[in-house]
Length: 296
Image 1 (cartoon, one colour):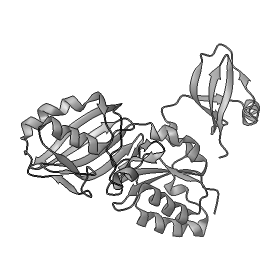
Image 2 (cartoon, rainbow, N blue to C red; image 1 turned 60 degrees about the vertical axis):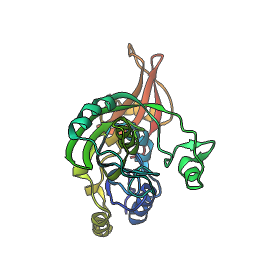
Image 3 (cartoon, one colour; image 1 turned 90 degrees about the vertical axis):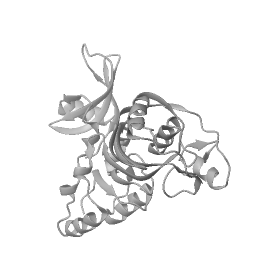
Image 4 (cartoon, one colour; image 1 turned 120 degrees about the horizontal axis):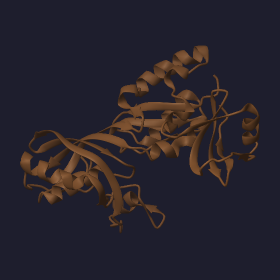
């Protein structure tokens, strides 16, 4: 099979970790390097962009991009994990009205402070918070600023509220549900969670593990997986493109800076030569300098 470089947009099923999903993809495709952009909880489903081969060099751009989730918050009960898989801590709490929920929602839009859950992958003195929580220890997790672009109530069938959120990186859906309930004077946990968007990667273009297995079987016959892969540069759509000559491209591949006349300093540029993506670069002090060179 040909060298595999590109993005596979997986529709992760419920019940497995993001890391296990990546391992399954690696096993199916035979690729050496793979990584995912943005972890999904085991009970969650939806868009899990998986970078294969050279695409792993662009993972951070996908991780940093906006994400969209649809989730169900159940009011009146709290769980230690903040989701349906946790132990019940409190029950019998107030069930808010739809109007009360709609009044409070705007407080969770924009730049807000959020404290990640005790059961999260945040590292505390070198240990994951969820490992401490499983031992019965409470981690000292600091609040941090996050961005919520939008939060809307889609459907309310008490005690269950279905919501949609578009946000920046690092936002915990479980914390949104718990904090929203606290503002309403009650408890809540997330019973269902689906990610529908990561940057330009949409659930509409995602494929299941079952579909992937079938396609890989066919691909082994013609040595090509291109029908299901997005290009390496797919995570870089919002980054400006600079076309350079073949001679300049050769220099850049060798790590040599290129003189650029009257060019403003810029941190990220997609470099294209002969119509082909070949590098990420920056302009500093009038020179184009390679940051990442891609072998695709």
